[in-house]
Each structure stands twice: as structure tokens, then as C-alpha cells.
Length: 101
Image (cartoon, one colour):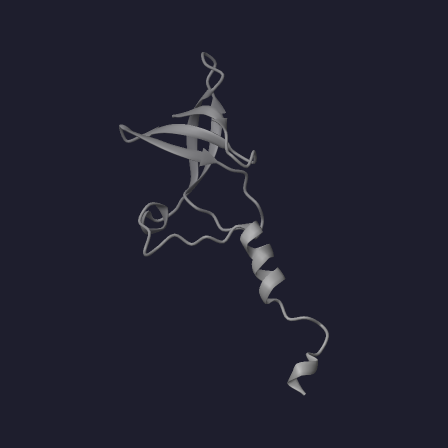
């Protein structure tokens, strides 16, 4: 079961609380985007009649446990903004460098 309680900070997804195996988990539901990696489970949400923000969960794909909640090292920070700034600093220019002659 999933309870929606708001939008994610970027506005692209929904912040949720999920009851799974008698444990309460906080998370987010995001739309699938072609070419982007999948983290966690791929689910379908079926609304309940009695409460509009409460959904039953159908799991279509469950990520292996090692991919879901067990990081193997420090967090990787690679947001779109990070990549744009990296390219702005380190991308090679199309013009040859005069100092190398």
C-alpha cells in the first residue's frame, strides 16, 4: 500500500510512504524515462475508493536488493546541472589552442 503526501522537490514525482512487509518506507514515485536508469521497483498504483491518496501497489519489476538499498561506496552526485557545469569547464573547444604551437 502507498500513501501519497506531496510532490518531490523537483516537481517531477510524488513523495510517498509505502507499507511493505509490515515496514513503513519513505520514497518517491517517478515516471519512467527512456534511457534513464531505474532505481528501486517499477510499480503500478491502483487508487482505493475510500481514500483518494491511498493506493494498492502492483510491482511490475523489483530491483535486486543490492541495487535498492545497499550503496557500495560514497553517493554519486551526477545531476543534470552537475553535468552541464562539468561540460562548461572541461569540454574541449572546437578551436585549436595557439599556446600549444
